[in-house]
Image (cartoon, rainbow, N blue to C red; front, side, top):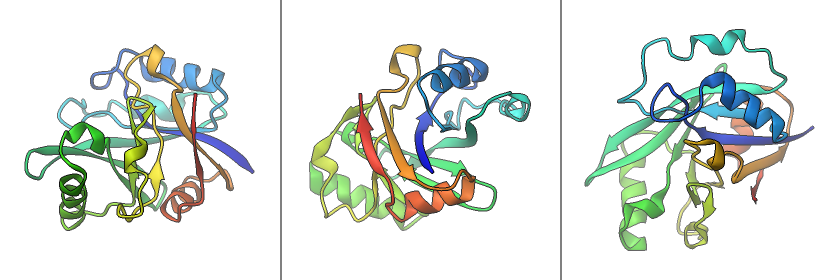
Length: 182
C-alpha cells in the first residue's frame, strides 16, 4: 500500500499554533496517511496526547516527543512511538550552524548515548541537500517540522508499506521510503 507521512509536527501541546484536532484535519486534507506528533519535551504538558485516541480519522497518528539532548550545546532528537517499535530521528542538523565534519561528529556522539535511526535532511520543511551524503550513515528523512498552518505539508516521506505503526517504523529504519517536497 502506498503511504504518505509526516514525522515532525508540533501542536498547542508545546509551541505549535494548531490543536491536535486542527493538525489532524489539515494533514488529512493534504492526503497524508500518517503523522507523528512530536512536541518539545520541555514544553509538553502531561496527558496532552490523551485526546488522540478519540480522534475520528483515517490517518495513523503516532505520538512522540522532540527530545532536547545536550551534546556540545543542544540538539533535538524525535522519539516516535509505535506499538512495539520506536523510531529516533536526529533533527535539523543544518540548524547546528557548524561545519559538516562537526555536524557528523555531533550526530555520532549523540548516537553513542541513544539510538539514532534516521537524520532529517530538511529545515522547517526546506531541503538541506548538503546533508544527503554517504558520510551520514543513516536513512535521510524529509519532514516539515510544522509549527503553524503554513508550515504543514512542505516535506514528507512516501513508502509502499502496510498500514501498521510498527511496519512503518521498520520501513523507515531500513530506508524503504523516498523524500518529497512541495
